[in-house]
Image (cartoon, rainbow, N blue to C red; front, side, top):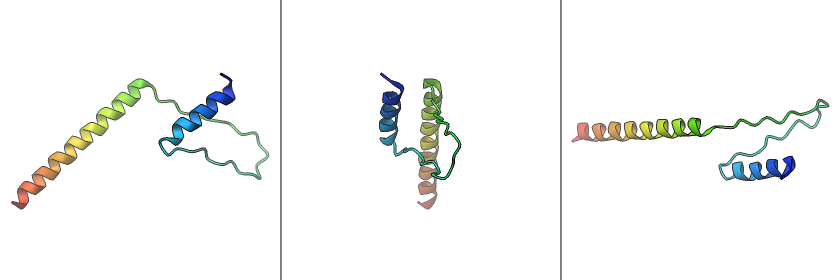
Length: 70
Protein backbone atom coordinates (compact mmCIF):
# COMPACT_ATOMS: atom_id res chain seq x y z
CA UNK A 1 0.00 0.00 0.00
CA UNK A 2 1.38 3.41 -0.92
CA UNK A 3 1.69 6.32 1.51
CA UNK A 4 -1.20 8.09 -0.21
CA UNK A 5 -3.36 4.99 0.23
CA UNK A 6 -2.40 4.78 3.92
CA UNK A 7 -3.26 8.46 4.41
CA UNK A 8 -6.60 8.02 2.65
CA UNK A 9 -7.38 4.95 4.76
CA UNK A 10 -6.44 6.82 7.94
CA UNK A 11 -8.63 9.79 6.98
CA UNK A 12 -11.59 7.46 6.43
CA UNK A 13 -10.98 5.75 9.77
CA UNK A 14 -10.70 9.05 11.66
CA UNK A 15 -13.83 10.38 9.95
CA UNK A 16 -15.78 7.64 11.76
CA UNK A 17 -14.93 9.50 14.97
CA UNK A 18 -15.77 12.93 13.57
CA UNK A 19 -12.13 13.86 12.93
CA UNK A 20 -11.42 15.56 9.63
CA UNK A 21 -8.34 17.24 8.10
CA UNK A 22 -7.94 20.93 8.81
CA UNK A 23 -7.73 22.91 5.55
CA UNK A 24 -4.41 24.62 5.00
CA UNK A 25 -4.26 28.37 4.42
CA UNK A 26 -4.42 28.97 0.67
CA UNK A 27 -2.19 32.05 0.81
CA UNK A 28 0.76 30.33 2.49
CA UNK A 29 3.71 29.62 0.27
CA UNK A 30 5.55 27.46 2.78
CA UNK A 31 5.58 23.73 2.40
CA UNK A 32 3.04 21.99 4.59
CA UNK A 33 3.95 19.39 7.17
CA UNK A 34 1.55 16.54 7.72
CA UNK A 35 1.48 15.61 11.42
CA UNK A 36 -0.28 12.61 12.84
CA UNK A 37 -0.40 11.65 16.49
CA UNK A 38 -0.64 7.91 17.01
CA UNK A 39 -1.96 6.57 20.28
CA UNK A 40 -0.51 3.23 21.21
CA UNK A 41 -2.51 0.44 22.77
CA UNK A 42 -1.30 1.31 26.28
CA UNK A 43 -2.44 4.92 25.96
CA UNK A 44 -5.81 3.77 24.62
CA UNK A 45 -6.17 1.24 27.46
CA UNK A 46 -5.32 3.90 30.06
CA UNK A 47 -7.77 6.35 28.45
CA UNK A 48 -10.50 3.68 28.58
CA UNK A 49 -9.73 2.97 32.25
CA UNK A 50 -9.90 6.66 33.14
CA UNK A 51 -13.17 7.08 31.28
CA UNK A 52 -14.69 4.06 33.06
CA UNK A 53 -13.48 5.40 36.41
CA UNK A 54 -15.08 8.79 35.70
CA UNK A 55 -18.36 7.09 34.75
CA UNK A 56 -18.34 5.09 38.02
CA UNK A 57 -17.69 8.26 40.01
CA UNK A 58 -20.52 10.05 38.18
CA UNK A 59 -22.93 7.19 38.96
CA UNK A 60 -21.89 7.18 42.62
CA UNK A 61 -22.34 10.93 42.93
CA UNK A 62 -25.76 10.70 41.25
CA UNK A 63 -26.82 7.93 43.64
CA UNK A 64 -25.64 9.90 46.66
CA UNK A 65 -27.46 13.00 45.38
CA UNK A 66 -30.65 10.97 44.94
CA UNK A 67 -30.23 9.53 48.43
CA UNK A 68 -30.00 13.02 49.89
CA UNK A 69 -33.26 14.00 48.19
CA UNK A 70 -35.19 11.12 49.81
